[in-house]
Amino acid sequence: MGVNSFKELIVYKKAHDLAMEIFFLTREFPKEETYSLTDQIRRSSRSVSSCIAESWAKRRYVKSFVSKLTDSLGEEYETEDWLDYSMDCGYITQEKHNKMISSYDEVRKMLISMINNPDKWCT
Image (cartoon, rainbow, N blue to C red):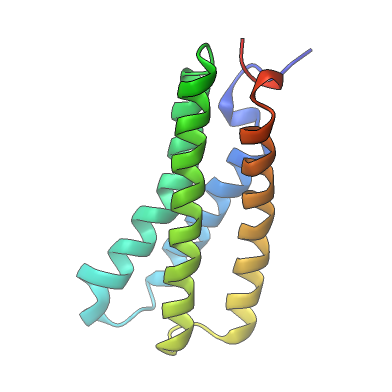
């Protein structure tokens, strides 16, 4: 039996969990970051999983599927950059940064695998 929903995908689950972790983590960021770093990192982290969900709906067409996964990959890289800023500004520790980057590394590898092997996922 195959995967019936994007919610069953390990990459989606990991990306969603990471976005939630970032949400709770950024509640501790300074108020002056509310409309900049906090909003940006929350938006990009949520977009990783939301683009995966969109790609699932488009898996009938390989190019559309790959395009949305590529968007998700771009959002993943953006989130890593915001994590770098978060650490450099002293809002998260080096240890927390390393843990988050390591987790996003797993997501990135799964996305790249799906992008490189779309026929496994497309109908």
